[in-house]
Length: 116
Image (spheres, rainbow, N blue to C red):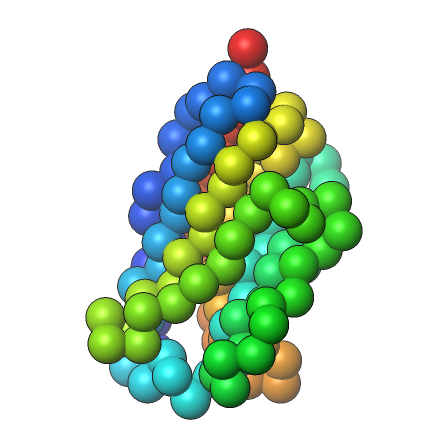
């Protein structure tokens, strides 16, 4: 059974850092492109970052470039998102998934709150 479980996150002041993790089970992470999405209150879920199975340069949405880093540990079957220089507009529930067209059911996500 394919499962994605996000963890980490929490609350931080603007300018701070947080990291979120995504433990994958039921499939081999190394064979899939993986993505992070986020959904802020009252907004649509939006794409944040992609980690390529090939190991190529990750892709990031413009608003997080230079601040967020996506990475993976294929031995641990885990995807990561390191978030630095956080802004209030980064407040959202963060989700991981396999990239299209191999997406599976969304997990519960993990809350990230940036507030002073």
